[in-house]
Image 1 (cartoon, rainbow, N blue to C red):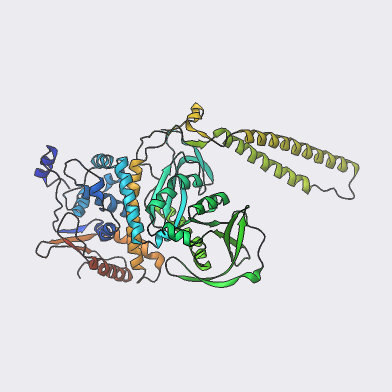
Image 2 (tube, rainbow, N blue to C red):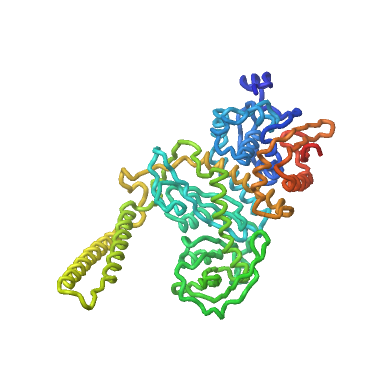
Length: 561
């Protein structure tokens, strides 16, 4: 579809138009028109909140509101990159914005570049995180922190290698540290190519921000009056296990919760009692639990809660939250999988690992990074330990039959001697490498790296801007899925239904007399899906959402209703 608002576009080109207004006309069977059913949830989750305060666009045809709505609906429609917009019908997408057509990819890239200014993106992200936490203070009481490695295969820079658990390989990339709630909904993300690990990022970047932004924290007088009271609880995996870190966090009255990295012997089965545990989405399960007080190191006391599995294995949880009940601690710990599910879903459907641009940033010369020499020694030690283990196993498996002949005895002795000699050589190498490792600093400043090992990080701002929009889209989809759980027999199918709904055609029917814009969705694949869509329409109509930039109230229904 070509441009039909020619006069306005010419005025915009010569600087006589501030921005084009969204003006809707009746349209039948608009491709992916169902994505407008997510607009109330997008607005409720802050898509346009404080955007006018943080961002500025120069005068032109497309407004800030239209660009943000386009980017968010692209994410929900699974248009995963700006480049993929080339293969979408520009006129059909334009109808969803009340325009003749959407911007071409080059124009959209320029708009994103203008919006993705570091201070503006940072201010907007902080404002949204604060708003999300303030809206649900209980969700901000337990905060889940985990790192996600975004692998980089380009040749612009040689990023440091890090272990990627999902591929079981050490690959070059950047680690994104996400902070989510119990249901997997994100609050914010910290990206760094220079970080030495989860604990360092928690101390330097995440905890200071949470202390400033988490709502409902007790006052200093309340903390002084109750020695067991805490501000909030951090939940993370075994990577964050550190008694010293637990103690340093409790000095700030922040509780920590993780799995025990080095559990002691099993507890007697008689200590376990079956408990009812409430899961994040309201389900209840029964599981055998037991609790003890445990001392880590010399002076760190924690609660240790164990779950007895059907196989007899005991899962050990550590927590410095002394106020929550045992079942609450177990529920919040096992809900950590919601964050793993979030990573998997965001990679598959929202392309959070995709490279946004090819620009590189600047490195902090004083930042501490893992010493490549130390990493090389670690690899050598692991290799030697593995070889020694295999040789020891062969040595221990050698047996000589009682009725062996002289030649067999000689061969046995020779083989045994060779293995013993190889083991001794390996142990000497191990001792040498361990001595070298002891003298080698684990971390060094970036400026002290050898020239071939120096790298520059990828430019983070544009990625951070688009990730913020994807977070809003994910939270909006989560809100819609929560509504559909009430009427769907299988709650796991809610997101699949929403993806189908977003891809379905719809009729757009504006009515200036009643100041409404009706989005009439075409029927879905079966009767049950249509019934769920009717229920969702009732929920959306109750919000009385007005399409941004117009006076038209959105009305949702199925075609012929």
